[in-house]
Image (tube, rainbow, N blue to C red):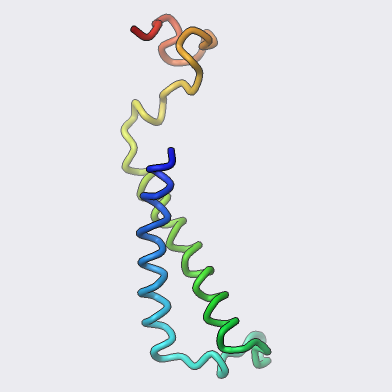
Length: 97
């Protein structure tokens, strides 16, 4: 499970870094407006908030890619110990060797 989380978080972190560089190469944080008003945050605060927003969006994209990469057996796998599986769980009649 920790490997799967790292498969999601690390590429998303790198993508968020690249996106942050590309966006703020052309946009000055002090010129940003929200609902017609100037955002009253410092440059550092805008950089930080946007980085975490970019990271969250990239993590969702990476998580979806990881989910779509899973095989049918991984998706349908019963989460219970083989000796304690309920009757409707796939592989309920089998006991692990």
